[in-house]
Length: 354
Image 1: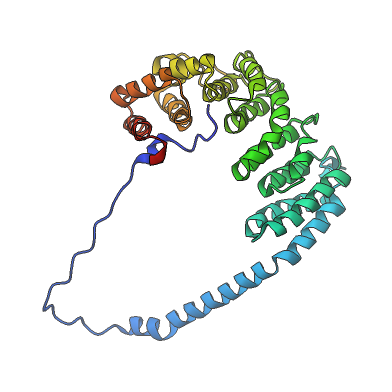
Image 2: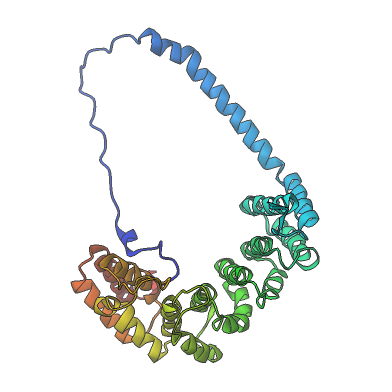
């Protein structure tokens, strides 16, 4: 169902801890420390402090050498980018593994970059590697580099990402949509340039491409983007299974949410009458792999409703809000009720209260 399943409505609950009791006045003095405690104070604790100091010295030294490591990683990626994961005499080419390992290590260093200037330099290197060095059959390396460009979100990077949208490899197309989603978290306005590509990906043969494409529409499309309405309605009407045997129900859900956010009556009706309605959800297939016809149990319905509520605050249709009021009053899950009540309170307070 909706993207961000980890963000459930139960997040509204909080807990508190009490303070320790005060010491009694006039209590007898404690006995002197044992020999073991004295040894700990004199020997073990200073040793631990020294070990921590050494560890911190090593850590800061490691961070200081990040740029050198990055140069080495880029060189390894560029040197090995033309090799694929195809087996040689029953074994995977070690050059392919080395290039891929360097790429994953490089992605792990992105969060350490302090300035946009540093991020731009790295992004430019990755764009050139993707353009000039990567073997089109090396799908895993493409996946890694595309996701890195999405996370960096620097000028010139999005164009490089979008050039891979028509890749014959589903893994690469998944990375394109993932990179757009990552980009939108850092630069939503800039990511809107990807809307024409996302429209085409709504009709992808694979569910794992269609669904995040619809989710990206939820973030990027505006009511003035009338060209997205018809493709989203087609995606909402997706039926059958993809080549991997996965049904398109999650695509339908996300397309409906995107339409509801655009104040489309058809999408709003589906959100109100299906995604926020337990009886309707109970009739839907629970297994998106298509292996069984089992329908949703209560906990699976919770997941769908909580995920949908994450988007409801931006939906204007009164039918949706009527269903939110029903959830606040009668839903059996206390977390769902609390999330619905919070949405209603925020709507009543108005935008200025957020």
